[in-house]
Every structure is written in structure tokens, then in C-alpha cells.
Image 1 (cartoon, rainbow, N blue to C red):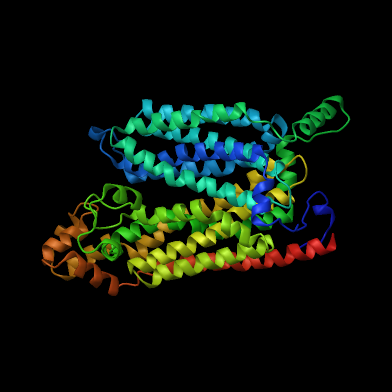
Image 2: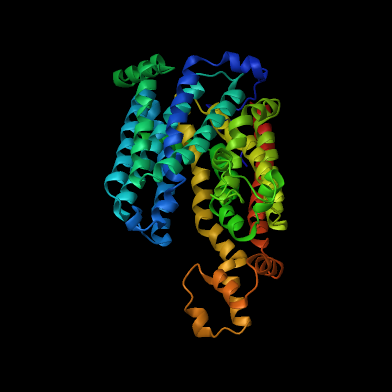
Length: 511
């Protein structure tokens, strides 16, 4: 790794002592809370659609759904993911030059259009085009919001600011799916109309929004027009910053964590549905009869009988924890170097994945989700804090756009390999087909079983209980291997984060 000081002349790599928790909160300006409100509104709308997108895609046309295959749904999601993660790389620089208020306004218009397209055109192409608009709008929205946050905070309260901001994101992540659950029971198009209405609230926030650093931006633009200073073409400017080793190495070492992160949300719900008996949790809390309390069923994500936790309910523990405790983790990690906190978070997440692979006990899966959530709280807010801190003046939003690159790399790779690993090592469907053949069912009858019905066929063919067959299949296959491989990828990332932190410390001492 190069030690050249010239490559980092514009980047501030210093670590600054943070204020205490209450002093940090008290020091946050009104503009910070304005952009926090805008982020909350945007996330409620976003997760309202994102959380229910798969259910909408699979629902038959007769019920108002798309009635498309999961392959077609995967095409939509992959395009959505790539656009949403790579667009900010370019729109960040535009936000720095055009202005944050202007780009936030434009993004809100685009996102409303996306929701309405989904509502008006309930078919593959309508949902795809709506997803593209949402991805584009989100890619434009993020850098302006995050750039404002960086300019409205100081180096002494930045850890708390990003921690609270991330907490706000997860309040939206928690409430959005609940909004969708209510709306889709009326009709599917109501989900999209509701989300369009919710994000329209950001126009009210924009009335109270005042862009920090606007005078400096206007003065810089004036000097550019008068020829006093020259400005590179945006793509050249972005490329100049992207090829700095401090940015390149950041992208490489954190891509592994984002592989880990997205596996939890893309693959773990399937794992829980197939291998984890979540009725144990309900029995522990309410007794063998479960609970008929509708409020508890709703907030805990239970099924309609109140006897088991749905996979979405298990995963919602993640958003619920971050929503209630992220600011405490931010206060604790503010005392440590950013890369040290991120390394600890990555290690905690790796242990969580090893635990998922080692057991299918429901309460142990709960513990794993709790551990992962703490790890996520140590890493995810810090990545923005880190990039905002090292960004040169006038390029804050551009650098915060770069944050999405390792996420795009990790999410893109996981989107293909995560489900593939699960299919190879842990697919209940495939194991059921194999056992049916072993138990004497003819190859033609096995081949004729419709997709997704292998296990129920196994239960009826053998006459054994679903629980005993699940235990048999779990004990006779190495289900945990998929999770161990994912954890190994995370371990490579953790080693990279450690080396990156050591290298940055060396650069800081040489400045």
C-alpha cells in the first residue's frame, strides 16, 4: 500500500475526540432533525413497498397481485439493487454542485412517480419501471440528505449524529412493513397510494429546510463561472476521488460485510420457515395455547392463530433493536477509532452467522439476530461517518455516494450466491425429494411433484409428522455449511478491515 502523502492531501484522516452522549445530542442543530424527519418519512414509504414486494409478485392476478414467477421477480430486484447502489456514485457529486434542497425535491417527485406507476400498472413491466424510478429517486435522495447531515454536524458530535440518523432509518424500517400489512388487506394498490402519500410529507419538511454551506457552494460556483477556479467534468472529478487508494481499499474490504448483511435478509427468512420451530418462543412467553391478543400478534409478527412467530416477525427484531438502542451503541463506540468499532461489529456479525449454522433452536436464532443487530449498529452508521469525515471540502455528498459501492458489490454477489449456497446445502425441498426416492416413490412420481410441495408430499407419503421429518432431514444433512461459508466470507472482510485500520493509522501519523 502506498504511503504517498500527495494522494491524501485533501482528505482529513484525523480522529477527533467525541462529546459525551447528552452533550452530543444537545449540540445537534435543527437542520439535523429536519433531515432526520425527511429520512424517516422516506424510509416508511420505501420499506412499505420493499417488505411486501415478494408477496405482491407471487400473489395471483385474481387477488390483485402480479402473478409472476420468482425468476421474473429476481430480475426486477437485481435491476433495482444495482441501480440504487450505483446511482449515488454519480448523483452525490451533482448534489454537491446543484444543491441539496434541489436534489431532495427532485428525488421526492421521482419516487412519488415510482409508487404511482406501480399502482396504475399492476404487471411485470409496470412494477419494473416503478422499481427503476424508486431506485433512481432513492439514489438521488440519499447523497443530499447525508451531505446535509455532514455539514450540519461537527467532528466532535458526528458519531452520535450518525447513530441517531441510523436509528431513524430503522424506525422507518420497522413501521413501513406494518403500514403495508394493513394496506394490502384492503387491496394491493392501496400500498402504493399510501407510500406515495407518505413521502409527499417531505415537501412540508422542505419548507423548513435550509441548506448548510449554501453560501460557500454559491461562491464556489461564482468563481467557476468567472474563471477564477476551474472545475473538472463531474465524471473526471468522481474518478479522481474513486481511484484514491483510501477509497479503493475501503470498497474492497467492506464488500464482504455487505455480502454477510444481505444474506441475513435474503436467506434467513427461508431458513427460519424451513428449519426453525418458532412455536417454542410463543409457548415460552404465553404458554402452550399461545395468545389471542390481536395487539401482541401484530407487534410480535405472530401468525393468525397466535401460536408461532412468522419469519418476518423474527427478522423485525433487527429493526426494533436498532430503532430503540442505536444511539446507545453510538455513544459507546464514539470512544473508539472508527475502524476499530467497525471491526468489532463485523466480528460480532460473523459469530451470529456461525450460531445460525450450528443450531436450529428458536431462541438461539433470536440470540443470533440480536448479536447481528449489535454488529450492524457498530458498522453501518460508522461507514457514513468515516466517509463524511475523510471527504474533501465540497465533495461530502460525492463521498457519501461512494459508500454505496461496496454495498452494491456485496449485495450484487450475495443476490446470486447467497440463495445458491442455501439451495446446495440446506434446501428442504431437494432433501425431501431425495428422501421420497429413498422411501420407494417412483422416479416419475417424484419428478411430477409441483415446485414447493415436496415436503408436504413427504409428510402424506410417509405418514410421519412434519416435526419428526424436519428433525430427520436436519440431522442427516449439513445444513449449517451454507452459513459457515457466508461467515468465512465475512471473516475475510474482517481481516481486511483490521489491515485497513492499521494502514490508516500509519497515514494519520505521517500527516
